[in-house]
Image 1 (cartoon, rainbow, N blue to C red):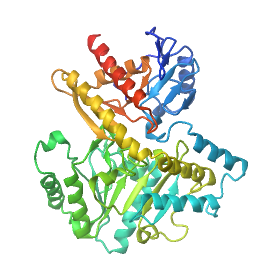
Image 2: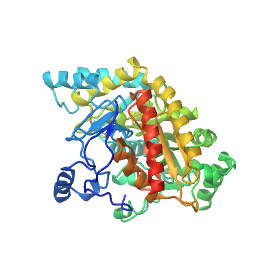
Image 3: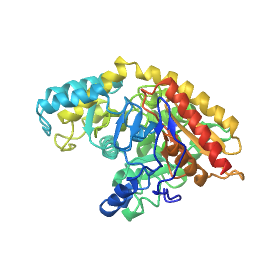
Image 4: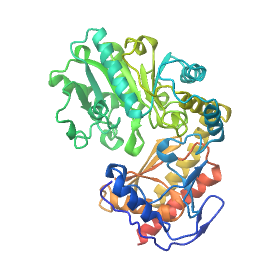
Length: 457
């Protein structure tokens, strides 16, 4: 996110007052700079670089600052608040546990722990039989890496190779960064795991009408030329359900071809469902769009309704590979997060939020495609499914335009709409699944106004 520095100096902007937005001060609001400067002094800079907004509270699909300004939230924090910010059912569940009281019990049992695991496995459905809970998404992807390699060990693979996809992102711990393909961000490790392989992502502009199956076959052929025997040297494929930075889904035929390779060669198929899970794409899990059956999924973000909860789900045969004590976590399945996770699943089911997300997704993408038609000189692609979307911007010469994109994100903030600033040519969109139809439509209009204003500046 280093390409554009957002100003912290308040700027007088037009006032906004609608049912869903309220901008009544200069933006950033007075006092914002002082708080962000305090954080600069004591917090690692790696946490900084977002739009200059200090959150005071968030309710349902709105975010507020201390000055009383109110934004429509198109971020869900970062695709966390699927059931809405400060969801009343989640809040009630947490309060009940706080009053119980039991905050932590390590690997000892608790009733809410049993109830949540049962509900989670039931929600995931076949073939998932067991779960392992953690606190952060990167822990879950690390656990998947461990399980895939333990499986390869048991099955007698010559090497324990993992095939990953270029551009996918799996977290910031060692194994997770090895599986991610950003060379600069994993340079700190000092070496590269020679048994973690990356193959190209089948972007629509790269395929350009060519067969996804042939694209995969060519990628695997290049691995073979490097001496990698898929049957003997690979124990797992790890796919981010969609390319995170741009909500780019794979062609179905590509993923189905990977599944066939896995079945034919005794390889586990795993999905990183951090952004895609728990209704975000209009299905319970994003992998379901591809009509495949993975062996493992790593989950997080929307799983806990705002509390730190992540996990791995898989077949019992795989989940039970580690011996007792070989895969545990201090805060795994503590009563607080289990109560929150249970409330999230109940909200998704009782309010039919997955079906609603599919319906609202049609509204969102209809509006975004209209923007593409309105701004063909700036908008190159509209990507995503359900309530996860991206708008990709290009320059007049057709090159990715990160600067224009950042200015649009900043202008949206000044107008009462908060979008995900990626630092590159994409604006990500992921409102809480509870957003109302009229707020969704209003936000699309605001995005269009922001593009118009930045274009005219």
